[in-house]
Image (tube, rainbow, N blue to C red):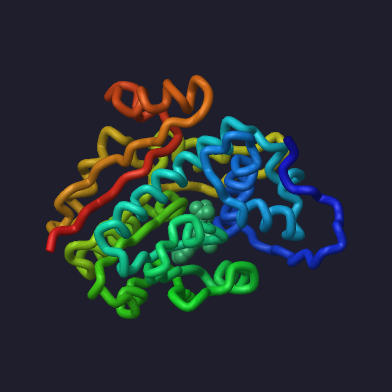
Length: 286
Ligand SMILES: C[S@@+](CC[C@H](N)C(=O)[O-])C[C@H]1O[C@@H](n2cnc3c(N)ncnc32)[C@H](O)[C@@H]1O
């Protein structure tokens, strides 16, 4: 299977010029699209496929040909975010989802129940790109600012329930920034929850040494915040209102690793820190 066609097919091909952490949104998009193209995919994501086909960006030259194992892993992580949003909407059908650093995520269209209110918080260059490619609909809005500037919270109506997501974001911040952001969310949104993912310390250290490179020469940006699954409970100390922090279940996928080993590793204390990523939820008391 091939990833994005790099040839010109005559359609409008919007240019993308991003670098550093912002460019990583294209890696995520590419992985979701690659997995969505697989027969028996674990993630239906036609918009991601359409975007990868359309954008003027050399996905395959930059990130390499599709590696189904990696793409499926990324898609299963995305599925655990989707499951958390759906569970929230089952309890709060008119609730507000605040998607910090949404990039070109197409989650809104995967989980939309026709009533949810959706707020994206993104940096200017990414917000501009997203606005061109995935413009906000009637129940969506975009706040153009850093997620670290908690003034975004002033624009979020907490009345119908709030779920905050930070997918592929916190690892790029300094540990003190992560602490402050999570504490700020807990302070501003009693009764809400934050769903986030984290890389373990060994993975963070490798990015800091510049060792996470593709054969094509693309280097993942430094990820200064690493958190081992075994120390997840320490997040509770960030703010007294954080009542519970727990890892989310990884859905079962195809093949030996994603179908059997990964869900097992998640339950084994000695081995769970070896996985390259985990998804968790922090709940805030009222
Ligand atoms: C790995 S991508 C994740 C995108 C999307 N959440 C996904 O999973 O496909 C990282 C994203 O973080 C955004 N970002 C980086 N620093 C940010 C900040 N300080 N505030 C808000 N967004 C930020 C980038 O623009 C980019 O969209």
